[in-house]
Image (cartoon, rainbow, N blue to C red; front, side, top):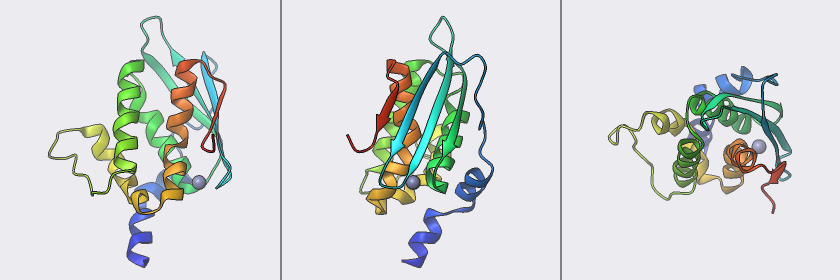
Length: 155
Ligand code: ZN
């Protein structure tokens, strides 16, 4: 149990949780969505600046949440900048797949650098409640791209 918890709160997660990247409201944002996870109390607003070609020029977030939800949002905003909507959605799909998979993933072999970085969050697989924390910002990003104002993990 303690080993599992230690894995879950690895140094990278704590670092992003305490010092989140892109924690701001961008002036140029043209998409935004509120993500709520009532089970844990996480509330995050994700902001995107999408250009005319559907490329995410900027991604940021504000709000309150546990270390897992904030760390995941922080990493997400770093990873989706410069990606197209489709690429960001595809990464969300791979991330969600990792969080709900029975097996410990290994993305280094697959050459998937984005997922290799997100793999520090794979410990949530053993904690179903935590999966909602880890995927919250991603659901909000997805909702923002679809033009929806908010999304909840309990719907
Ligand atoms: Zn949480």
